[in-house]
Image (cartoon, rainbow, N blue to C red; front, side, top):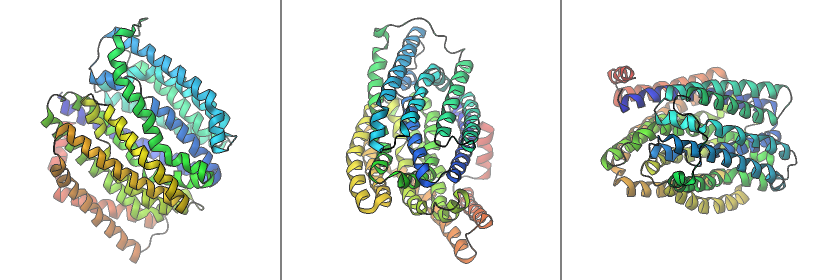
Length: 478
């Protein structure tokens, strides 16, 4: 099977995994939102951010360097394995001991025990990390997808059961810990033929991986602060209740691309890494990735924008109307984020993770002042507009970096972007006409809006982008 066929087959399984994960996450949020008031949901929001902080560290260290260097030496892999375990234990201790500082920052005593329980994540995740990255390197995306699907289903069931039994904000933490324990055991089991741990550690063998990983580590820390500075500052500046509204809006407007894009890039990275010596092939691959992400993300975000006032009351119940305006603003930021994500693939394939670090530093320097001043002026709405401006600046710098890596690509980019944007605008207009002349309240009208929007975009895509015969050929290649 060629690399292209492996990527397509991997993409199929990753897409299935993404759809199931998204549905489970949507169901989980909808149920928790109905069980908790906005103020209490703010506590869950902070817990989610903490879990996000922990999850962000799972890709730090030296994992991307294994793919970039196509590492196969078992001694070096064992040295990296033990180095990762030490890193996990060290971070666990730091987070556990720093919980009083986080409690003081948010003025919320209930966070103390939540942080200490959540920090156990670090003692679990690194045991399976090498196995996961080696399966990714060998393009075993079907196995990884099955692990992810079963894990998210388990986590959703556990979280909902805990929530219904009165565990409140702890329900999400327990669900995430159980999910990660299951994933770690499954990664070790299914990846055992790729790696067997040896009692071996030599610092000299991993120096190059450490050099590669330092920028990855720094980029991850700065990237987390950059991505979550809005949540951090809202919770401290504006209070837990507004943070609850803002986070639910983020989950709806940003969650689709935060789930889809990294997984698509996970499939693409090992393929693009094999092209690192061929700039023209890398440019072609980069534009194809952008094209695919545009067709997946832009219609979803456009659909969310036009149906937000129908979807929020239907799925989350009364009391969440303030999130509707926030969602419509965040959709704009999400479009910019969607187009910025593929730089990750190029930077690591070219062995330049430092570019991501510099990009996050520049974005952070702009984003925090914007959040502070606009948040003071217009509360959560101001923070949402600050996010839009910061992501636009990030995208401009991002494209400048891409240009330095693969040369001029903007002509091909705008040519590919035109159709999904035009199709999405036509789709939104069709849904708008239905809402104006027929209705938009209730299950029936919301379902019709989604069906009409999907039918319009699908018909335009089949007519002007991808024919039935091409879809059949694509299916056969999988």
